[in-house]
Length: 103
Image 1 (cartoon, rainbow, N blue to C red):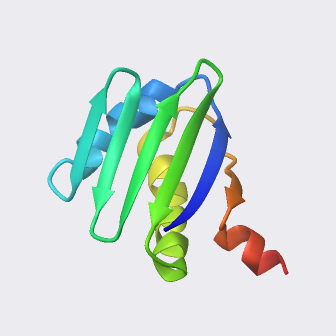
Image 2 (cartoon, rainbow, N blue to C red):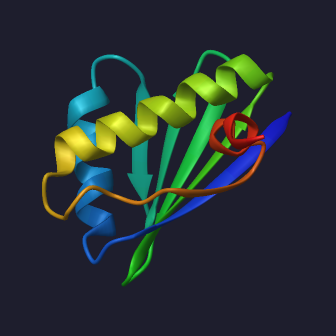
């Protein structure tokens, strides 16, 4: 498994998770319990943890192409469904497609 984590500054972390759950409800398995959201994909799982000043997104994927795709999906989807803050800033650590493209 490949892991990447992003810390996304926002005061609306819990609301973003709720918006994702509504947006993806019929497409994939999304749960939100006890201050944590979990999204299950075919070849990956993502955990979303809200904090008072940030949303922490952790993705575990089977391979690099899946990781790259899901990182891109989270960036675009959260910007689209949220519309609460200025464009969100994803600071990915681990196996990040953004880091790989910068090389």
